[in-house]
Amino acid sequence: MDSGKRARGQFVRALIERDRGPVSSLAWMAGLLLVPTALRMSLDTGSLGLPFLTFWPSILIAALVLELRFAAIFALVTAFFAQRTFGGGAWFHEVTTVRVVFFLLFATSAGMIVGTGTMLRRVLRELGQVNERQQRYNTELRHRVRNMLMLIQALASRGPKATSPMDFYKEFSLRIEGLAEASDLLQIGAETEGRLPQLARQTVAPFDRDGRIRLSGEPCILPADSCIPLIMALHELCTNAIKHGALSNERGRVELSWFIGSGGSTLFLLWTEKGGPQVKAPDREGLGTRLLMPQPGLDGVELNFDPDGVWCEFRIEGAKALTVSA
Image 1 (cartoon, rainbow, N blue to C red):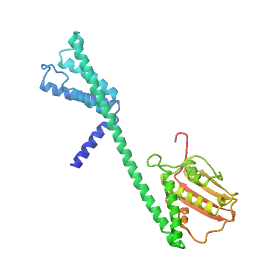
Image 2 (tube, helix red, strand yellow):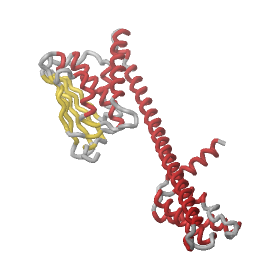
Image 3 (cartoon, rainbow, N blue to C red):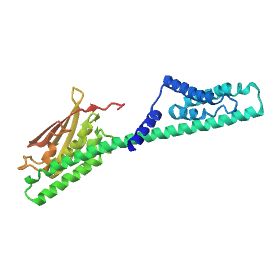
């Protein structure tokens, strides 16, 4: 039963939601005119005096499956054809009060049918678009949740490197908080592609209280799968810079720059710290190390603990320059 209802629903949506060109619309108009004509001729040749009885459903169908202009034209053609064929001649062959009243009644009825059918067509098409968006959002949401769970699992797997359960809890909680902040920057369905510099600016804003993180680079669009990994990596670099790096004193600064390579699809992004305390490599790997490694979405990551300041270069494939029309 459910499959039958689903099949009927898909058939109706296909009829109503499909856009038809002039040739297809004229073919529909011809069919919708011939079918009620044949039915009427098989039942009555006009002796009952109801020339439009079998044509009203055709006008309604035309309003549902055709654009408004074609539906209106079809209603007009149907009126003249039906009256000429079954009504004993043209409407105004003889102008009388009765004929004028009948014409006005027909025009009002036809207009109501065409208007109602057009409104239903618009509503059904809008509902179809809403349903498609919901399906797309659900698919995207499942993909996001799956990626989140994989990332959380990867973060948790670094637990044995912590010196104590409390250290692990504190560090892991910071990473989860960063993941939540990263997720807030990406709205489901609204913009699956991240854009620079907006994405980078929003990510570093909570850490840049006094304007010591400078961004530079051409506007560009990131692949959807690269957004959260890059946000998490930048969040990790900002956290480390505040705790141990260039943002831990009053003189340090950070430069975040990027550019699209000559191939037009590879983004190179460089994080550089200057003016901070002398840098030395960490004695052990923390939870954040996993965020600064090559992974799905970050095709290349090179982290260097230069004594003069940490620098980290990212390579992301599938990016593209943001033009005015993008």
